[in-house]
Amino acid sequence: MVLSSNDKTNVKTIFTKIGGHAEEYGSETLERMFITYPQTKTYFPHFDLQHGSAQIKAHGKKVAGALIEAVNHIDDIAGALSKLSDLHAQKLRVDPVNFKLLGQCFLVVVAIHHPSVLTPEVHASLDKFLCAVGNVLTAKYR
Amino acid sequence: MVHWSAEEKQLITSVWSKINVEECGAEALARLLIVYPWTQRFFASFGNLSSPTAIIGNPKVRAHGRKVLTSFGEAVKNLDNIKATYAKLSELHCEKLHVDPENFRLLGDILIIVLASHFARDFTPACQFAWQKLVSVVAHALARKYH
Image (cartoon, rainbow over all chains, first blue to last red; front, side):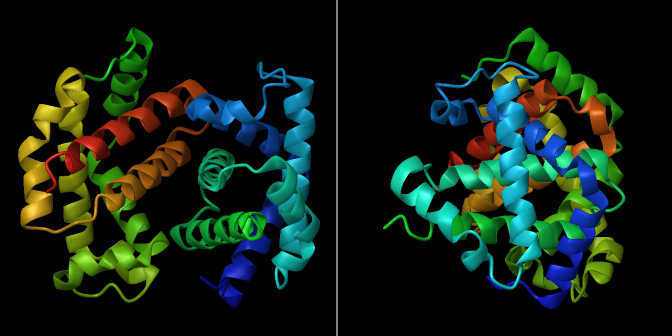
């Protein structure tokens, strides 16, 4: 699966529209993921997972930051997220299936806040991008 | 048997009552074919699927999307008996249509996104949970008779 130049344009456009809300969307994505897919909470036994928790806000900010970093280096996502990829392989070891769940929730959040921007083509590009990010983060697992 | 809390049932039926099945079904199927283009393999007889515009405007896609979502409504009406509701359809998808059940999961995920875009903030996390559970149960029921 390769990101076409159209895909890259679509992803950059949507992230421009998201603008300063990225951190907020990161938190909302996580919250929805924990509620929709409770098994994902198993990776956060040390977190307060209540609505509005400072830890979810902080972690949402981190997740959003990583996505933005990937967008800003969309021609070399593997390079941009190399350290994060190491972290997930060696320390966090989040099962690969969960990246799809996070991606689904991010798409839901974008659909809620920007329904008119998430045209089918942009939806396809964003889904591909999120898959690419997930692939990079799990690339060194074995 | 799947257990639904009263709240989950309420969230499901309330959202369903506000859906335009024709529009929503058409959109969901079109998005499936656009976002996951390999799913077009089942629709060679549908004519022009060469671009997102073609897919969205394709009358067979619209009609089939409506048909699929209408059928989904049977699950909403029979939440306590989804397995039996889809037994025959499951056999059909296996024996005649030869559809990999993974496709049911893909369509379910797409439907969630369509609902989110239509209902915005009203599509609360609790709502998303209930509907994600529903699409998962429907996908499972449709795969159940596979052999």
